[in-house]
Length: 377
Image (tube, rainbow, N blue to C red; front, side):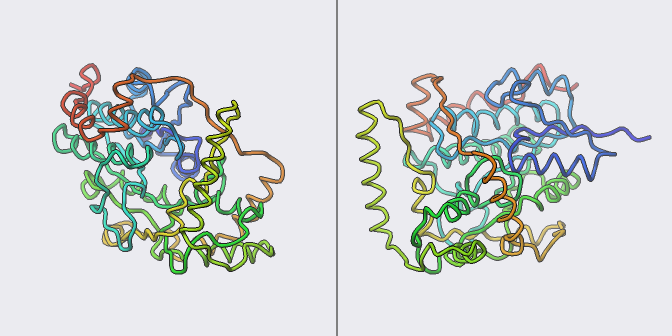
């Protein structure tokens, strides 16, 4: 009888992580013992948690699907999206095991046919999410070159799938239409976005783990072959829901942005009276509604991976997704906010905000080596 491999996935309670856990438990339960520790057992923000848990479990591979909320503070974005992946990678290097890192198209500019190398320059002007994701990708690449890290980076675009406990990304769009809070189209004609199918992703990750020689040290876009026209998607959802809105009226970006700025000023005024209010998530990333971001699939298509459902897309799954989420939202209130009162070192916070390039250089100079006490003989 063969011994099961042990896999550890961080962020197993989210859409991506939960889908991966379910895949291994249903399709590879005879060969892989997948572990998804809760944040009480392993907080990705705690270096000691990572070292002690992985030393105890001694996994054969690690997958990181954790991520801070898109609108997180500097502290949370830095700790969850950068320090967590860094320490997981240091542990994986010490244990000499593969490390699969889930990243995001937030590290890419707008445009079409974007290659894996077409990343944004690291800059203080970037939002916290994009900045931390870029820093993590850069550090993993450096660790592969200097420390022998066996890693693969999977870059996702807009993720869709069932069983998401948070309303974000595509599900935020669906919610806004279903809630009839989008009276008109806040986009322009021909705006294209790439989408990532959560249900297919575990097949690709497992293939990468089983074919390390081909995938070690590379970043690969995992998105559907054809980008999606945002207006067409919105109007298709509207037709499924048999709603009267949003109307097929395209609001110019200048007008939409003026409205957003006015709302921001109002919220800032209310905070002076102790009333805590945040900008709605769909307005925080308004720019993305007016700019195309279509990722190249050339590297994925040239690889040995075979798509398990080549005809499946956001449009073919839309009826099931609409039914699933409308049923769920009619019974539960899933809109929650995260309020983290902890503060990290002020100098690091300032560097992350104003000088991320120098902060990254400083960390690279002293903090990317494998954990000595974990190194296998």
